[in-house]
Length: 88
Image 1 (spheres, rainbow, N blue to C red):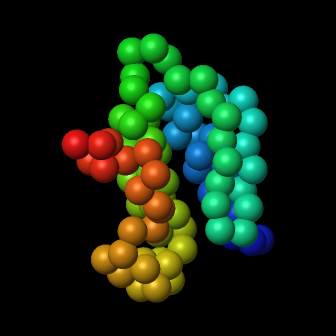
Image 2 (cartoon, rainbow, N blue to C red):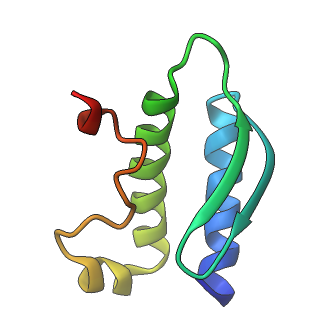
């Protein structure tokens, strides 16, 4: 992810973390992946937070960049790495 997309994604992730009272300690947006080091409140599971973050950030990014909605279509924008549905 480059340029405006990268900038928007950083802003979106920071905002969503703040909304859920998650501390974003460190993070990097790279070409095709994101690393985040976060402190999640004990009342929230990692999978619940990641599902929230992935879902909301995708919608917010598509609102800012509608061309991605067409490009990605029904495919998942994010990998399913911490999606709780995988663990069921």
